[in-house]
Image: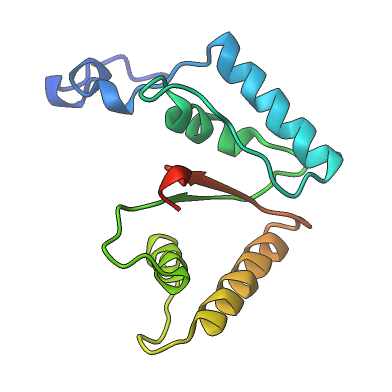
Length: 143
């Protein structure tokens, strides 16, 4: 039996609109496009649109629905490029490790960080029985 008791007011989505997401026709089209990219083995692509129109929320909505040709879920990772005071490649890899909650040595070199990220992504893909992983990079213009 379903519990039909009302949510407390502070938990209702109406009071926190930033957490709400709707499967609009454009979100469905985005899912189809990303699925096509995965099926074709595309190694890089980007989504362009005006600011604050829902690109980030749409990618979050579709991430759990991306499937490979065999119908298996494709693991997805998200990376939001921060505003940086140090503009180095190492800083990008360090930030990616932090956001993905990968442990790393503070004195790790750029190559060590990059290798660790590649290895961890490979582990995630293997664990989820996939031969690929999708990395969504938000605010890519900051790179």
